[in-house]
Length: 421
Image 1 (cartoon, helix red, strand yellow):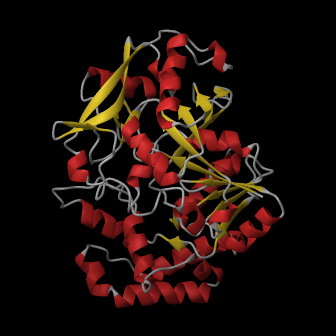
Image 2: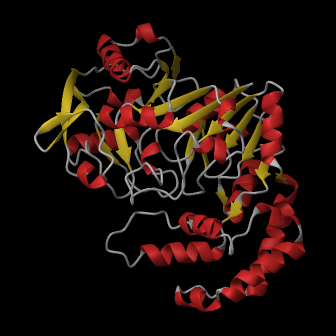
Image 3: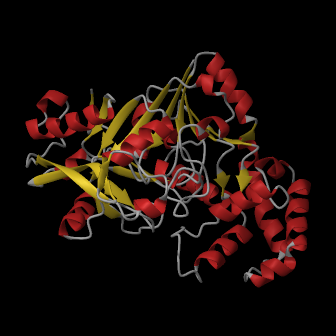
């Protein structure tokens, strides 16, 4: 039995897609356990670029099983388009399954998301894809549709008709005037396509773990976008920390053997919210341009800054990290001086403790440790010992500060641009 969780330790966009794809080779099953199509993973294979929003990254291995777990909210139209896109590129999608108890994102959820976000002066910065409202319906327990409802035309039609009827006045108020007959017809057609993929995921995953299969649990977004532990309210609508893998896939915590935390060699954030080490200057622009820091899902430019170890250490504790994976180290080549935040100054006092109150976090002053940079192109390096001395000093400081071993260093977007320690 081997259950390994891959988790983003920052604000998302840490490069999880590539590493999940890389680690899938050693796994039997990959499970996506939370989020929706508000997140995106980019994978580069032999110069071919793949962008996923719902389908787990392991789909490119035809001999692996990939599962969309019960903690995910699923826009079935987006899912069908992803499947169709992969099939057009020559991939046989015969290894994808969907948890029947996962909830669906429906057109009214998207309408509500856009209605809520547009008039606000204090925008959270959502993607407008209906993820938050879908989770609200799920926890509200009355106006939600699950994948199990897609198993018969009668059940799906009845659920859609009932929800539209019961919420007619509210939907009109938010500008959603969908025709019931048209929506039912559209989703019955979708149901026929995905019906064969829907099944009892928790039972299957537990049985496979008991057989000794290796299961990789794939998270979306990052730790500090967690609904409970992130920089609230500038967060996503689900739990993004490692413990959510159990709830979002239907297994017990005793099935988990490793938790691998992925961090960029620097920091980025999309959308609003506190970001202590943000560089709103030419250095931040250089990081953005070199790192191609634009969102997979929205194309929005990412805010960039130096690596924050106060935040990362808190992430280590929240997730119970056992090892660290560092991505985009190659982006730092060509900087004369690099900085890492090792403490915060709060009310004229230095501290290594991350403040849980986001209002305090908004006003901390980062205290930096400076490092000499390197100019060498490291994207072709295959062994740790062949990295420049200054690069190794940078990595060793991170590992020592966090008291965590570094398992993998990524020095480029491709599968082969990876150093295993």
